[in-house]
Image (cartoon, rainbow, N blue to C red; front, side, top):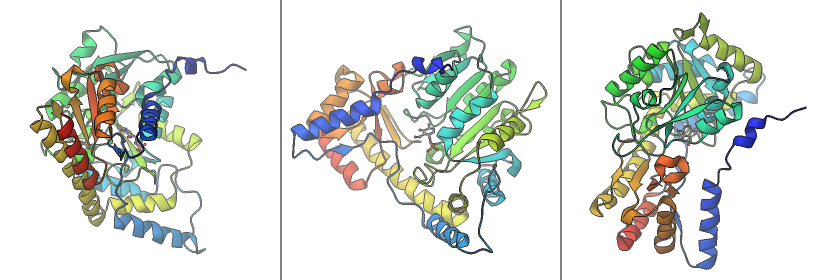
Length: 395
Ligand code: PLP
């Protein structure tokens, strides 16, 4: 018996444990400190009423023999796949419900989709970005190459960054709007990526987890808004941010029938993988997800999204007044440049010590995040207002 030696190459993720330890030590040393946490990427508002009612109805279904459900279809119930298809129709994207695969969240699919790719594929990962892309590929031992996001390119690296390194791209991760920077690709930029992937026979894994926060109507919320994407991209998304399902767990992956590599359909491979290793998302959760994506449910989701976006605006307004460089607008995150030339962790310490605020050091999302910092808008209005007052006093 041999273990997967690739696990030895994983770097311990100290980010959130270090944050928690530092915050706990601060609270212990300052018994009266009322710490406000603007570090967490998790929703805080309750689920939309439509989802709650539907899940309660689904529990009742389970209580009666006539409506009881056992194993469901591995790909997801047709009612949910059709609701997702209709949600995409509102974006102007036409999908067949058979191209939609329901899962238990974006994180699982981001890792699991790698089962259908060879382990010697070159993987391209933006820096900074959501850390799961990196670790899922380290576990498989794939060669990993970074493309840099920085102030100059608006944290939106373009294909030239791969060409400059003379790498043959196979799997390209994209996250738009990006976690942590909130940077969002426009249509021309995404078209350039799609054209590049097609020309190089690469596959784009497009993480659209934050699509619901895009406020600028001209920006694409799905890569399938771009011509040619059906032949080179897989989109992974979830109900976590749009409907507050982080604790409920429901997501989906979209693979077009047109995505074919050397005569093999990637959708067929993914279906084979899922029917072998996955037994579907619970009926109750799928009922809730479909209700959240109904017209009434989406109205309720929108109210929550607007609430977070209003928090983000308050944070942005304060930073603008203080002359602190930052990006905001299409994400529940504010990405700021640490003032006074501080490093990410120095700024973390200062904010905690002087303002009793916890944020997330940008360096935790990749080396290009050093010198930057992420503030989250997932909180109550009251806490955000209080936190901004404190930041004004300190800076
Ligand atoms: N993708 C990105 C960019 C994220 O930031 C997150 C979670 O914060 C996820 C995926 C995971 O989402 P899910 O809750 O659907 O697993």
